[in-house]
Amino acid sequence: MKTYIVKSLFIASALSLVACKSDNPDQLTEGKTKKEIVSFAPKVTGRILKIFVQEGQTVKAGDTLAMLDVPEVSAKIAQAKGATAAATAQAQMAKNGATADQLRQLKAKQKGLAEQFEFAQKSYKRASNMFKDSLMSPQNYDEIFAKYQGAKAQLDAVNAELHDVEIGTRIEKIEMALGQEDQARGALQEANVAYSERYIIATNDMEIETISLNVGELATAGYALFNGYIPNTTYFRFTIPESKISKYQKGMTVNMKSTYGNQEFSGKIISIKQLTKYADITTAFPDYQPEDAVYEIKVIPTDRAKVNGLLVNSSVTLK
Image 1 (cartoon, rainbow, N blue to C red):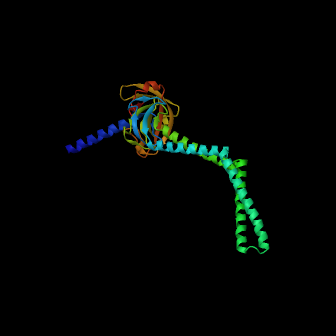
Image 2: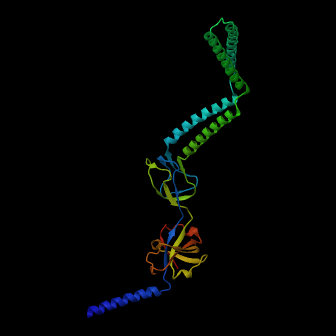
Image 3: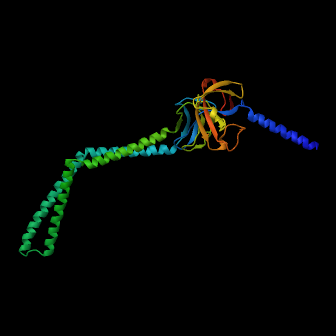
């Protein structure tokens, strides 16, 4: 009997405490301190040679954070330089056309073939007369005629070659050579850009929280090597149940208090959004039913300089 009375009193006391907790209109809502996150990653894969910063350091936009070793890119630059030099020479040769020595060689070749053709032509005329008088066999006549035709073809070929050189290189060949030169220069430029990416440069100010790799380790392209927070971007997140969200509106000014240091400050609600997952809440011990909708409010402090000292993910209370 006595045990039953004790248990009844315990249950009654527990229910009273729950009722007092639920009926307390001044109960505080707990939230978390946040900052905008930023990370820097290399654009090319390479081994880390040097790291110029350390965790906890604040860097400015344009600061060099690390340097990588990218030997593959160096090899590509050497290849691109060779291809560019060859393409440039080819384009220049196409513009200039044949040299004076080449022109003299073609004219000398033309002169020699012209003399051969003249001799073959005389031989062919004599052979024709002799063949008509039946003084030459058909076999000998055919041989002389073939030599005549061959000499004529060689002379026609060298005349065409000389004419092509004298009028200059065709515009299509020049355009083709210039296109190859542009392509080679583009490859060289691409290789130089990739080589410049061996330096990891901060694109904006950041408070470095973590450095993922050490000197000597391989950093792959796109892997976040430096992670941290953007200075002066402190804000607060609070999880509000459906039963209380009507008290808050976008643009409203609210008062808050840090759980350590008893620092008080104010801020403005800039957004209210519904959370889709119960696990996303920021309040450690929510006092609402699981079936209630959950909302998150984002608060920007009125004076950010006043709250810059707050640690990320530290607790604050919403009055």
